[in-house]
Image (cartoon, rainbow, N blue to C red; front, side, top):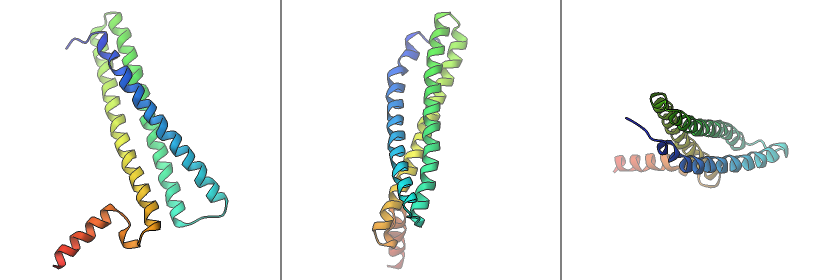
Length: 150
């Protein structure tokens, strides 16, 4: 398949918006880390706080991978445009495909981070709610066991 100069250029707005969204996630996590740090230094060392810190460490790592893969995808698009300009179409196609795969993996990591974020919110809510209603999955399990008893 022959790609034109415009093909990699089509990814520029998409990748830029994606990187902006990733940066916003990072900034939200940074604010949360600062708040939890203050709580921890203030003497609050509950089990929930420690689990939140563990979750945040994982989420920060995932955001770093998301951002890195997104930037790598952007670089591959630029390099493939340069290679097309120099009429190295075969290499440009391989570099562009690598960029697309990088973007795909970035989106998958983003999905994992969103899942982890949801679990962190469930952890927050479990402090407020009754212990048996700690989350979506436990709610589903309890409904399933109620049906079996009927």
